[in-house]
Amino acid sequence: MTAHKGRILAQSAAATGARVARAMSPRLGIALALLAVSGVAAFALAPGTSIPTPPATTIVRTLPLPAIPVEDEGPTAIYRHEDRIRRGDTIGSVLARLGIDDPQAQAFLTTDPAARPLYQLRPGRPLRVATDSAGMLLELRFLTAAGDLLTVARNGSALTATSAPAAVEVRWSMAAGEIRSSLFAAADAAGLPDAITLQLADVFGAEVDFYKDLQPGDRFAVVYETRSVEGESLGPGRIIAADFENRGKAFQAFLFRDSEGRENYYAADGAALRRAFLRSPMEFSRITSGFSNARFHPILLTWRAHRGVDYAAPTGTPVRATANGVVAFAGQQGGYGNVIVVRHQGVFSTLYAHLSRFATRLRSGARVAQGEVIGYVGQTGWATGPHLHYEFRVADVQRNPLTVVLPGGEPLPAAQRSAFAARIEPAVAQLGIARRVAGTSVAALK
Image (cartoon, rainbow, N blue to C red; front, side, top):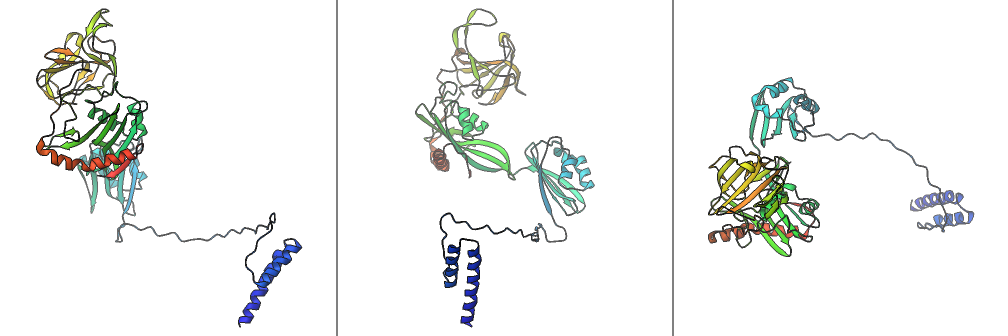
């Protein structure tokens, strides 16, 4: 039996060798045939020798589609869909695109007061629904403009709509960069959101003059919050930790909530990073006229002292209080136009002039917090264009806001230093990672 198999294999090999030999030169074909008969399986062709390409054959087979599992195995299968609101959408067009064929649901969504947030269909917002196989609406979930989660649910034949504050998931993200032309250009290259860039300038505003002190080679690293609801981004939150190197000098800031629930930024040793006053009442604006004892007035056409700083900005740009205080005056005052005067602790006061309007409910005697919007840029009074005139006064005498020594903030009490050191330890580690991956935006769990 074994000998018989051997003969069959030898004959088959010889036949194969003969077929190949006929397609090649006689000498090479004989050699291959002999190799086939002798049972040798490996061979090599001489350089330049070609073998005819075998014909290609197309084979078509019908394969069964995999079964798509549904959420329930009961009598009512649940199908989930998600889509985003498009420009020009109505409730009806969105439901139709999601495959919902449910006149009762459409009537409910357009008439029930609890479903009214659905009328504000902002493009880009997600809408999630669950339906049965017939297209009946079983559930709808929608994040409203107010940050609430609207849920429409079916219970038997009845539909109900409820709104509740959305459960916000908070993660930490990191970014680092180096300034080559401007802070915003470096932040964009590092993938840092504009809102966080503005916070960065605010946090270090008492230590770094972001209008004139920045230079190429300055570096920063930031750990900040990113917020989302059901996987949908709500944008960035607060800066958790940051460091900034300006002209070879390094500064660090860590967010900490004290025992009384107040949040502030402190250096690693517990020193208050934020001073009692912000250096500027506006977020990034061009200075058009500085503090001077002799400036040619563009309206009076005479040389006069200019006891403040002018910031150019479009009408309506928010103006913020540079420190905690009480509004001493809010109204019209000669060449100042619409003006606000705020009294601060001790001998300090600040003035904000040429405003287009005041913040809602702002009045004399009202308390304002550092960074709170108190008015908006305008062109009232003696002004040739929209801008803010800002004055910093000590005992009612104007001082240069850009050079005056600002009073410091209160340091962290000694009793809270150990809790502070333990709380910032994870942020310190994240800052180290951010510096090592400079130029890359990284997300991490809180």
